[in-house]
Length: 424
Image (cartoon, helix red, strand yellow):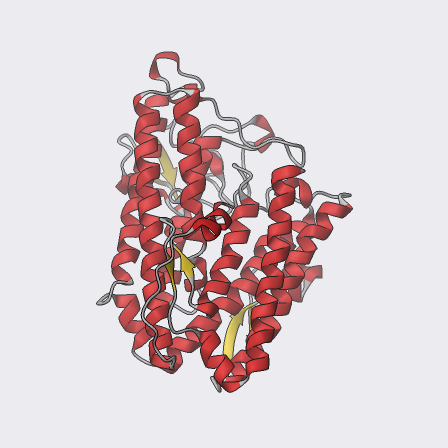
């Protein structure tokens, strides 16, 4: 689905109540801008790790004493953990180290029948995936490409072995979305109101629903443990002596290219195209990023916040402190003040559209309802955010040219570039 195109909620509260800390003033040049970009990456992945550790503790509490309260607390912790993580996604494109790692923690969509029980409406088989309903929680031993896979003991290593089993991308066994499914269960409401409704008794060994409560708990804990470990690896990678930091700082001009590649690819091909326009074209509630929890609006909003952060060099941490420093914005302003003003204006326009979408999600209807067929008002709200992302990408191209960075390759999407192909 992806092709290359060559081009020359909670956080809002934090930003209004933050205790601000400011890094010492420093003149912006390409070296200092790239250095600060790496510092922000480290801080964002640290926040992602800390909120994942809080999620892990909430999952421990759920497993130890299953109840409506402990299940809700785990769900709340998952939603909180998504805020800083989504703001790191701008680092994925342009940084091969991140892109190669990202699939372990944020791959989607997933064929959830690989992991656990599913509703009859899900079907029993897929021509594209022999593990479509393998249900490893119910079946300690399954066949993968004709070979027996032993999942008698569900550990982090076990589910690592299941991830993309059979070289099929939809066999997502690890990361945020596997955990999301295990907390919410399937969203069976289509474009109607409501998210997944997994009962807490799916973890209650004394009053177990849907069977295998012990194995389900083991899977959930393994996925949470692995998420913490994987995020810890990325914190190290973006530390002062980490592999990702050294790579991006080795050549400041290449570092600037990485920043703009991340901004443009996430804006255009990934977010506007694959995550938003595709679902809108198909009016398919399954084509939403956080499809079990109905948290998609927040994930999209935080992606947009992360894109702006890469340009302005500003980030509000989970503890409320604010980081800033030498920024791409300052470099552009020194070259062309009007272009910098244009870029910031378009980033703000996109955020306004995303916030309007988030406001609608909180007050009127969920994201999967907004993209539903016949919902002209909801469709228009989503389309406006898509339009903002596309428009800001055009200015990102101009920034590339103004900084004399040559050709920068951004991700494209059939949903935007060749929509007829989506229906074939």
